[in-house]
Amino acid sequence: EDQVTQSPEALRLQEGESSSLNCSYTVSGLRGLFWYRQDPGKGPEFLFTLYSAGEEKEKERLKATLTKKESFLHITAPKPEDSATYLCAVQGSKTSYDKVIFGPGTSLSVIP
Amino acid sequence: SAVISQKPSRDICQRGTSLTIQCQVDSQVTMMFWYRQQPGQSLTLIATANQGSEATYESGFVIDKFPISRPNLTFSTLTVSNMSPEDSSIYLCSVEVGGIQYFGAGTRLSVL
Image (cartoon, rainbow over all chains, first blue to last red; front, side, top):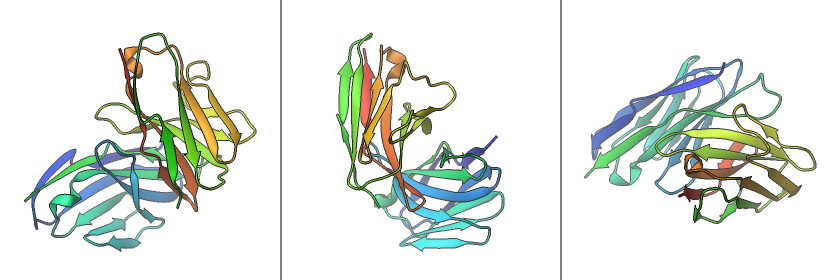
């Protein structure tokens, strides 16, 4: 069964203190791994898609990496506006439609 | 990408009543997805809706409780029927464009 776990559940950082969020997954034939950002009261906002081990994507202070079993979202010198819940999701190849499985998320707080 | 509008953005309903949530997309899409996000939790897929066919429901969700309509390629509705307090959640509409799922802002439902 496809599964996604994320750690830590919550993370508090000082402004400028870099860190990483982890996403571990089990999926039958990975079609894509997705990172989303969700602010309170809003729907998830797409950040990155990764398709194969070794792939990396960057956007501003965020960098996503992928191995065969996990993905990391690295946050470099975070700012308070980076505070949000970060969701990881995977799409496997064994379903006949485009089902995406979401992890529980990591709640990030960046303190000024 | 896609721009998704959901109505209503929030509602407070009485036990035993039904609420219909509308989802409008700014472009034609093949599949639309409905998710539930319970307080403090991640997203759970309710069903996938293709235009012109019956929706496909995930385990634990049934058509009598969550009937879905998909009259055309830009619109869908989800009805939450015979509501109980356990149905209090955020309900999110999503579409896939170019292999990426995009989300509406969600409907925050409270059942008294």
